Length: 186
Ligand SMILES: [Zn+2]
Image 1 (cartoon, rainbow, N blue to C red):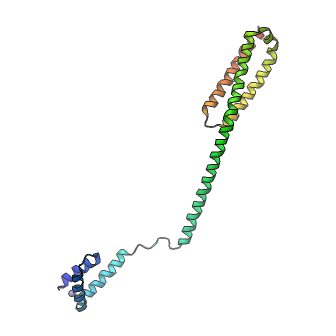
Image 2: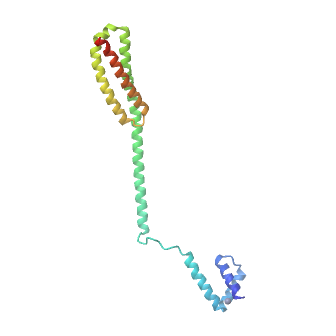
Image 3: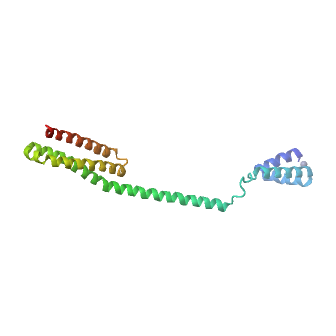
């Protein structure tokens, strides 16, 4: 075997594609050829250099500390998840309780002007007597409605529809009050 072939086969052996008879022949050659043995050593050294992973940039950070940090992060994210779940259930409960309450309050508020309107059509005399009292009641109701609106903003921040309804209601009541006061002045 020639040294050139031996070097070629050494490379092949490193890559793992050398047939067994060839490997035996190569071993035989290496036994008798110091030059090729030196070459083999150099090749091996080069191999370890190439295959050894690059040294860590932060040797002071131990695996335990990394594991600890990961564990802490997991714990924090778990806690955040818990808080989020709690918030969601609280919001759901608020919606379940708040929606019917808001609907009832809105219905009551809307029904009062309608009731007064019906009264004005059926019994105008009675309305004339109770009008001053009703005006006061309506004034209180408007203040209450404003408070209600603020409450709605706090409870259902995402429910713009409900907020819009409350706003329209307040405007309607204001207009109604103006219309009702007019005959009193005349
Ligand atoms: Zn040789």
